Length: 247
Image (cartoon, rainbow, N blue to C red):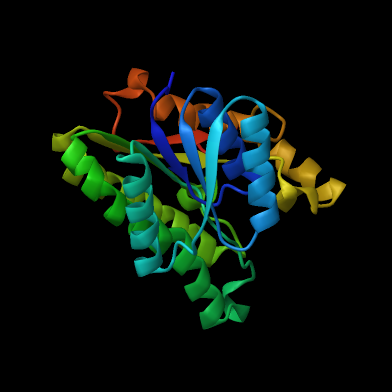
């Protein structure tokens, strides 16, 4: 259980991030719901958490903004006196084949997904180092391990997160801070809802378990990694993908 823990979840207004925020709150953590443009959705997540007896606050910040993230972490520490858990979930996609991919589309995905994760780790590790404790979980992707046509920018950002996770784990481990990653496969979210039935069927055929995951599958893996039961796990990337990637 996570009673008394202060947790930041980025990109928590919808999808996987929303499920993670709700799961951590249900286990007793005070959750800061980070969002960028979806204020109403973030407030709905907060309302649902509070209605269930949990505690949550919303904070607007674009994670690619170095100084904005610094201010967000400072506000959390000033308000709650500590920061125990950071889940770097915020991410975007701008899919197209490399020949047609613009520089702006490559840069924006790298800025949010990879630089945003770096910004949050950099600023969050300072109070964690003082506490000599902390849990950081970064959301990678099966695409970051196996690649995918039409997602060179996304795959590069998510592969970069795996390397960043291992480097941060080596730097911070001596102070009691664990850093791990979760690599989801295809999960039922707004992003996959727009896919045609034929595309979904083809994806399911590529998954050994034969079906798409749910947001709760990812949230449970994150909840484990931030718990005391995972105290001796760091620098690892846990695939939660129904067996799509095995390696």
